[in-house]
Image 1 (cartoon, rainbow, N blue to C red):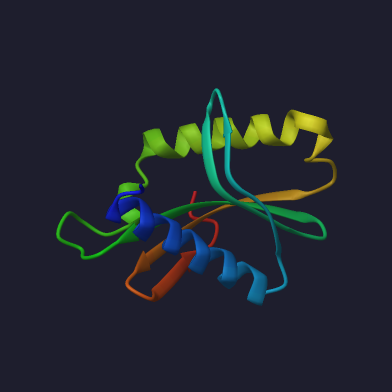
Image 2 (image 1 turned 90 degrees about the vertical axis):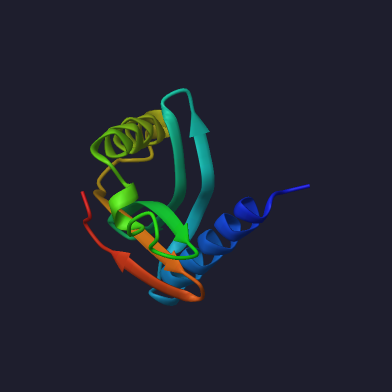
Amino acid sequence: MPSGRQVYGTRGEELAAAWYTERGFEVVERNWRCPSGEIDLVATRPGLVVFCEVKARTSDRYGSASEAVTPAKQRRVRRAAAAYLASAGRGRRRAVRFDVACVEGLSIEVIEQAF
C-alpha cells in the first residue's frame, strides 16, 4: 500500500501532466527509469521534448519545491534525459527543455527552462 507521501507525489505528477496536456503537449512517459536515474514526466510537441521534475510539497517548512532540485538532482535528470534521447533515436530534430513543476496542494507552478 502506498504511503501518504507517495500518493501526494503521484497526485502532483497528475497535476503536472494535466498542465502540459492543457498547453498542447503529449505526455509520453511518466516515471521513466534507467540506470542513470528517473524522469518524472516526458512531454512532447512538434520540435520540442520537455523533461519535467515534479516536486510536490504540503508546505514550505523545509524549503520551496524548486529549492529541492539541487545541482546534483539536475545532473541526474540530465543523464537520464540523455539516455532517454539516445534510446530509439528519440531526440532527433527536437529542442530539449528541462522544467520543474512545483505543486503545493492543488496549486501548480511550472518553471520552464529551470535548468
